[in-house]
Image 1 (cartoon, rainbow, N blue to C red):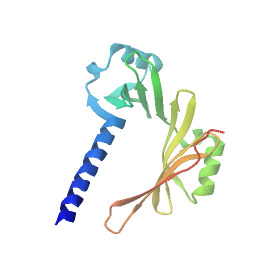
Image 2: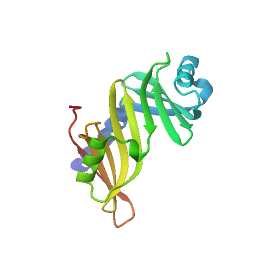
Image 3: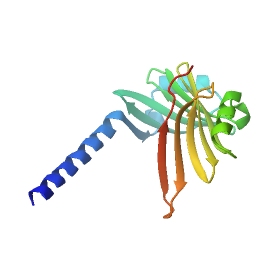
Length: 178
């Protein structure tokens, strides 16, 4: 009986710790566009004058607040993280497959036979650029991140299991941009 109570207490404490940790690292909250500071909106419109805002949210990460602006310009989706003072800290832009650097395509073709690219994004964070892709290969969906030189940053595989749910397998790979 004592073991059961101790087990329940440990389970309860583990859930509390995991929940608290998720709150510390990143929080996204949808907000109305008029809640985004004017300086952030002005910086967005200056950088992307033809883009139409589709959604806004506030993201808290490591004690800092960022505004996420989701937008569309023609067929291109553009998501920005921007500070209240108007500093753009990250840009995610959908790009056509033919705009991926040759080393990225070479690495993808070596690792994933018969791949089909579902979505490609160029992610610029400061001076760092990575490419995030959703691809299909061998009846699996893969989410991969690569440096422009073709080195993998991250790779996750999703496959349909017997119940129709997705199984996830994450693999961290090389983390340098050399």
